[in-house]
Length: 195
Image (cartoon, rainbow, N blue to C red):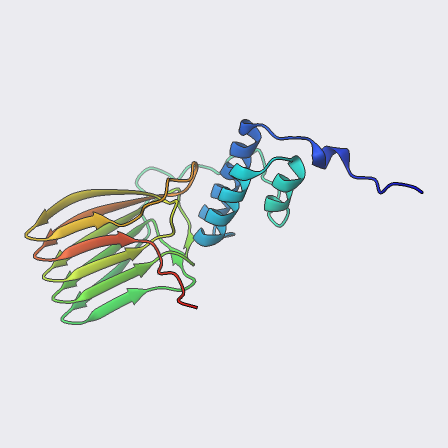
């Protein structure tokens, strides 16, 4: 009776450096829009728990081989891509599958702005959200594990992050610049489905 043969390469145990390399590849794929943020977070978590090369290979087998040639830098003075959301006595939202520009401006004046990034395609390593809440609310929904950095001020208002999990190494950065006056700017994870 002949035993089934396994590919010995797939059974070799991986090092921390190999895991980090795969996480970096996944981060690059997320910034290019090849993976959603949820897909990135799931795969990066699996990569950190992987024990063999075969397990790591499955996480990138549907992604193109990365060329060693770097992308040319953006020329100095090139304007950043921007998108504006404005809610005045109403509500405005951006959700679902969408390409996130380098800068998103969200302004809520006696209204509500909502930005959902869990299915979005981040196109840049660092995405900036300029959130202004004047007697209103700006809510940014981000998957756990994302590197979110909040700065700015809250005057008779509130700015807070409800993310609880650790930051996944190599994840894209979301910089939230807040200006909350009698309003709130909140970063939170997606709500879990009730079923």
